[in-house]
Amino acid sequence: MRIKTAAKGDLDALCAIEAEAFNEDSFALTRQNFLYHIAKNRLFICKIGNKTAGYILLLLRKNSKKARVYSIAVKKEFGSQGVGFALLEKSFTYAKSIDKKGIKLEVNITNTRAIGLYEKSGFVKKGIISNYYPNGADAMLMEKIF
Ligand SMILES: CC(C)(COP(=O)(O)OP(=O)(O)OC[C@H]1O[C@@H](n2cnc3c(N)ncnc32)[C@H](O)[C@@H]1OP(=O)(O)O)[C@@H](O)C(=O)NCCC(=O)NCCS
Image 1 (cartoon, rainbow, N blue to C red):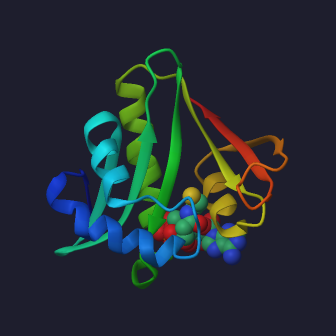
Image 2 (cartoon, helix red, strand yellow):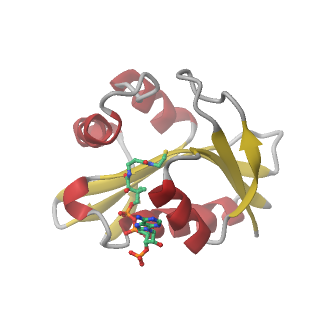
């Protein structure tokens, strides 16, 4: 398992992961979105052999002391192998290296699998944001301070 920074050549693989993970969702990232984030933010991918198993997108704002996990997804065929955990660990190391003091995220309160992974990675629940998603679903705000 290797984690590396995504480049333009990874766009096809990123779009394939996104389509599988967030097929029905209006907020799924497009090819253009990925291209933008490759240039402006930090996108890490996990390679297993020559396949791209998953990605994590970190948003980095100069005026914020915390990084934000905007999205994370792992291909079903590589699920439950620690790929999500490894992508989060890489994000912590990177965020620390650029002097961020913590990392936050929002996750659908029904996404118990993701919430379980975040808790295992040291995130704590900070509160519920009502009506956060376009379909009216609530989000759990979670945070990890380094
Ligand atoms: C959530 C997701 C990223 C997890 O990726 P993954 O590589 O399978 O996760 P890992 O193997 O690193 O870790 C899974 C951990 O989550 C937790 N977990 C697994 N299944 C769980 C469940 N049913 N309920 C609660 N926690 C669970 C466990 O702590 C597990 O660790 P373990 O395997 O040691 O028991 C992946 O399932 C995914 O892409 N889902 C669809 C997209 C998504 O929902 N993204 C998050 C919101 S943006």
